[in-house]
Image (tube, rainbow, N blue to C red; front, side, top):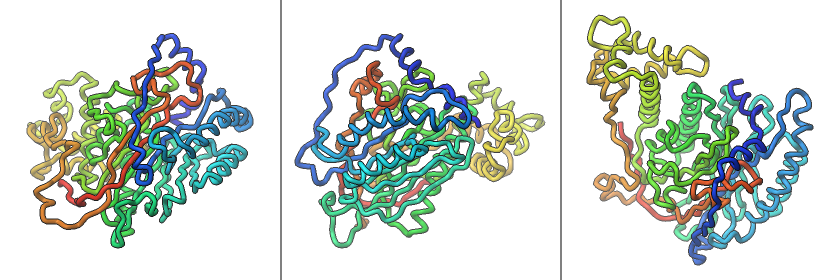
Length: 464
């Protein structure tokens, strides 16, 4: 398996020794408090990564050797289960839904303990194991007095990372619905996932396709159930920073990072915060709760995906130290004309390791990219098309505050969306871009976000 190395090298103790050697300075940070008057209308989501320190294990004894460590970690996490279900100092509300990654489903005792404690606290729990008996998986818990669960779906990627995703379709109950009326069902689509770790650049396409599958599945679910425009929240460990292809792909679809929104950070603010100390001893921001409101102007999903793949294409060309002119010649291959042919395009994709293997681009996906690049549809790419679609793409990027006001004027259709009231990371040092050397609960920080339901015009507009 391509990500087997990740599991076998995750020595958390050594990681912390690496971090200590960097002499990172701890600083105090005071979390902002939301208005307590919003207690009944605020929705709170918490992001967790629950896999703790593990020994390197092999063979049949893996479960037994990991069991004591998982239970020891659970004793620590149990405290946080208590915190979740009681006042946490943010707005004196409770955690309304809790998405967890790397939840150790292979240990029955651990699972039973969580189910009982969360159940006693009023949560409905949904679990999903990774494929091929990997042992860990996902868990998402929702407060049954604040949500009615309409549907729960499971998405298996069946790829080299054995990754999975959960989709919950929920309706807000009256206590959190200040803008409820008799004609409007206030629904949310919540996704929980854990993407493959990018061990090397060859896995970038796999990771991008995992997100593409999630968004395709959500889109299909909306059509299948004839849903009106509905807020979508994507939670989990994305194993990639704000500089990555996955981040840019989600932004192109109108999603906003709730933590960055709360702190008014831009896409360029990649070092303001961290949330993970990875197995290589690096600190990075990888845990996101993404929000897509119904009033967002969205591109066609296939268009955004094509942009992301072309962005990856350009990255690989530049990494090979090719200039713009050199890249065009490379794509032309053996063509005698001043244009790129489809065969030359396919050959270049294969040389860059984007095709030719089971997790590369399919023939259909390759043809879709070609159609997107061939602007005039004449069967070849000239230099201008190469510039516009691959080297210097001209498709516009959406701004956070960009709403198509002119197109929405006169429309009376209203829906429920969410504003981001607050977002905090724990331990607080990570909000300053540092990892505290005395933090042993997990190698991930805990992300908590407070949302408030608001009324807004809905938009189903999509760019071509």
